[in-house]
Image 1 (cartoon, rainbow, N blue to C red):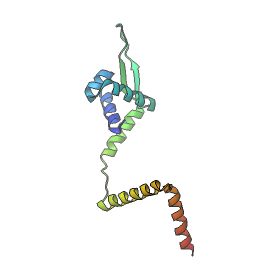
Image 2: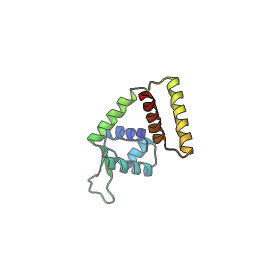
Image 3: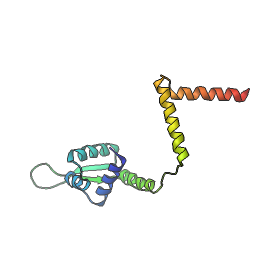
Image 4: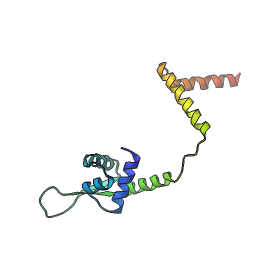
Length: 129
């Protein structure tokens, strides 16, 4: 479940109270996907699901609405979208080299954090000498 899908769901249910089928149509996604998304978001406290009260026969429609936490999640999501990632080409190349180094350590059976601690101890020992 992506952050974007959560934000899109919250934006849709914030505008109006929707059922699963309407939300599925708006998001252009299968209803099964929407149901699992809503279950996870409900467990996280982002949305609230209540059955619609009608006097008709059959299963009542479930109404999905955003909670206060869901509103805060959506506001934070929009705030973070407005802050672009600022990194140079050198920053990305260095991150790539670091990732390759970690992969080499892992393939050799070493734990990267243990290697970092060992290197840190060596540097400190040289500084004290």
